[in-house]
Image 1 (cartoon, rainbow, N blue to C red):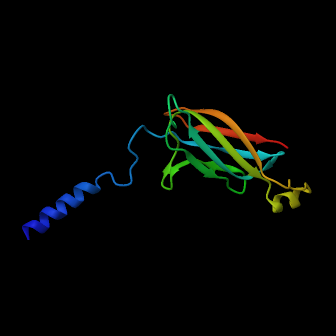
Image 2: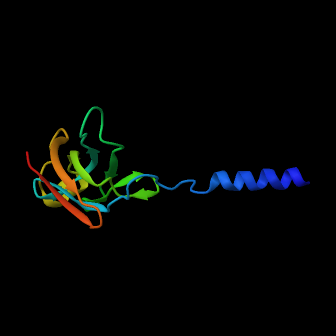
Image 3: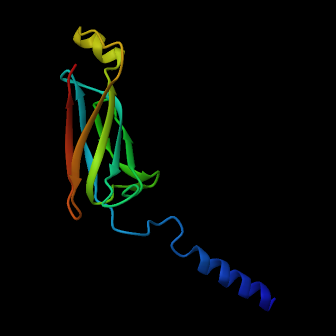
Length: 133
């Protein structure tokens, strides 16, 4: 019985911090993607820039909502991005339903654009990405 209690205590100790982000605090990042003036369907990747060799850390990702807005996540349950300078890749297209409502033909291929943005700790970072063909 005593060994069962010790095993339970050790197992509980190992789970302290399970699922939490270790490392620098994350900063909230959100925004909107538009393409030719319309809300775009797309994916956004913020890749931290390296200050030396290799990558600058784990990227944060998002997919847009129907209105083109997004919120970045480092993992499925951790909203935000690492503070610092990032290389941003946005892949966007206009959904056919949106194009039909506006009378504008959707482009045949998705637009890919690259940007650089700085994510600042302790602040809500809002980035609009305006893309045009």
